[in-house]
Length: 159
Image (cartoon, rainbow, N blue to C red; front, side, top):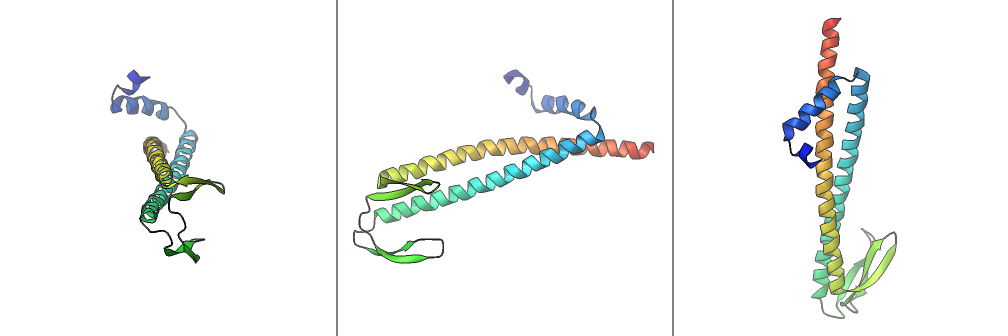
């Protein structure tokens, strides 16, 4: 498998085009629509990963800010994105970490920071992998579109 991929980008494209050119117009349209749909879904996933990474970055910054505040410090505590209530910092060494689906785990400040960093690294890794898949799907869609256009021109010229 590695030797096939290692043959250079031109070999992979050259190998795909004859397969596409053997297909009917209907098959090409179906492949183009399917790959376009997959590219759109992957783009949505990439956007969601970027959003989650940003939220974790903000959480990490908030933990850093919280760790330097003195005990007894008065502050506003967010209940929702737009609702804050007054509160007092009781213990900055223990934090609640949202691990998803409504579950929270009590961790030390350092464990909370470590959790954020691990999740950020995981999301960045997933982002890179998804970006690679999305670009491959996009190139397949583009190739199918070019072959489809060429076949449609041939059909209109033959008519």
